[in-house]
Length: 281
Image (cartoon, rainbow, N blue to C red):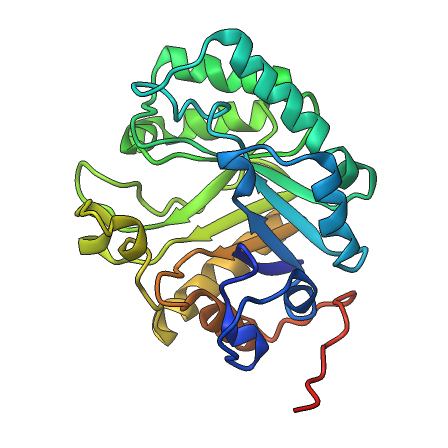
């Protein structure tokens, strides 16, 4: 199975005939079968908020939720918390996702580690501790530091993630010799492969100006590039139960058009989508 989704649901006018307004989750779920929600990274919502999300989508719809910043150690070097606060974040997070677990609507929890999270004995141990604290919940791991992808060490990394039952996130992003991560289409769990496509805007990605967050994913994939992704997806499909593609190249609202182009290119359709909302005007 191949699924396609976007980061957040509000910012994709291509899903509603280019109407220039926020897209509702109900409207989003009428077009695509999954969404990545980044809100929990900044602050862990209440379980009641998650339940409200569920009420806006069909039963088959699934969520990818980003792990909280304390769970991925984004606080290091800034306002670091103690071990008790970090453990509290894990406990609150697991409470928050219970409604999704009960309804089988949690595709995975995305642990996107910061660029300073290097391959080290300490950080390898942290992955083990993450698995221990999260129990049998589905986890996907995205690395942002190239030290994880030294060629000679990639097989060991994939083996370690496999043993921890963590899905390796295949990221497409700008990268240079000693910065950014390469595109490594390796799978580590039989249930899921995740591709996160950030675009290839090298200037916007690496030059951290004051408008960096608004520029880093300013990129639209070409038809040739989408065809290359289609080849990778077709190669991965026999290896896993599901290949999920998340488009994050949305600084100029390009994620949804690219997602729809890939869907058409690959001839994909999904059962269980929500009803299309018909405009009377």
